[in-house]
Image 1 (cartoon, rainbow, N blue to C red):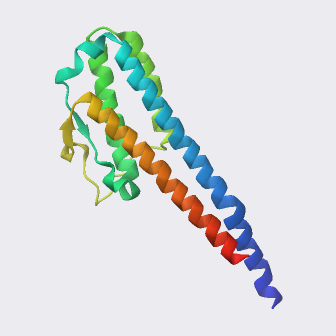
Image 2 (image 1 turned 180 degrees about the vertical axis):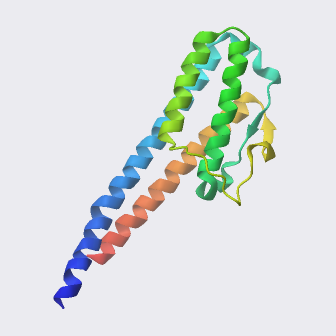
Image 3 (image 1 turned 135 degrees about the vertical axis):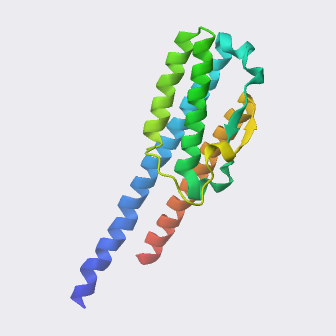
Length: 165
């Protein structure tokens, strides 16, 4: 009977401490992505670019597959933000472009983007083109969905750990 006790206790400890901590770390990173996105929006509204962006269309990924294509979708949003930086630079607002570039770097770091094409995920160009404000709203929806997905995962791991004790 002893040979089952140690593995059982180990599993309980993993579910009780490691998994919730891991989920909290990822949740904090997605919250930081949401904050950086809000800063990008604020920077754009204050920049000279805000008056010129009306004709710009950006590939806007649907967050409906965020659970299976998270990295692919986040990669697409980041690539489109980089296109916005190019546009901002072209109109001569280098300060705004530099600030947005820093926020993009933060988003890439927090999103842990090392892009790997997932077979079942769309390429960026397959998504619908939308204006800048709809693009930002779509990105915000993605961050909110990822946070709620992580909270559900965290809640399930807590229930599993409770059931094991």
